[in-house]
Image 1 (tube, rainbow, N blue to C red):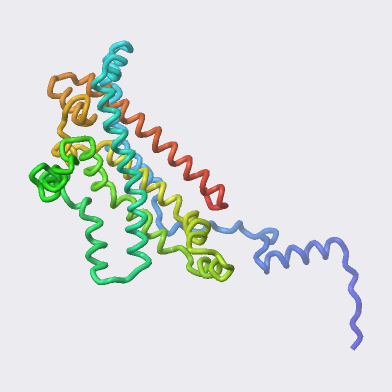
Image 2 (cartoon, rainbow, N blue to C red):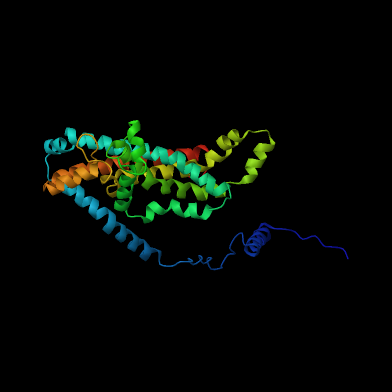
Length: 310
């Protein structure tokens, strides 16, 4: 049978294209109703968003707003005098300096602990993994008393360090020890899941190309876990800045030497200097927020540098 050629007019071609689009799902035929948008798996977005914002505002924004409003009771010269006295500046140095040192220590040893828990199998691994969370569950006052009894001049460790001229308890060094203790889980628990998700095929490929173990860690593993390391560092630092219970028992609490800012705020409250306490606390809050914002910006830059999602 001979096929008779069909003349394609512009109208027939347009109809054919529209029909094809309607059948293939690439378009909607003329006259058909618009496609219905898929229903959300979890409905009630507006309600849950409203409850979330209300909850965060009630627990976070309202207390912080009250803090700043209370500090506004001071005039500007009074505010400057309250937050820049020699005792307050010394407390700032002890708090931020000890917190920074403790966070750096946790950054190194937290990575080491997470590496051991992820990459090796050994007897007692589950026990060690559970001990990492002990600072989370242990009351901070109990941790401070335990460290003071352990590192004091008559403690199990302190009695051997005292003859060597090393004193940890009731000194700024004791503050660093306490802050390191309470901040370690933040780094370990932040890095551990990311380290588990690192593809070992990339390490094997790098090894087959002649890379050394140090090069594999530096070029393959470290870029993948750097955002998690920075997050753990920021969380450990922020936790250490506001720590009180575990530090007050081992710090010695000597003004200008080993007095932390949270203790100084408590002292001002006991002296009924509420505006001065609010002023010192507001400076502590703003400084911590700016440092955390800088660390988050560094994380964003690191992700963009390695082509990840911001």
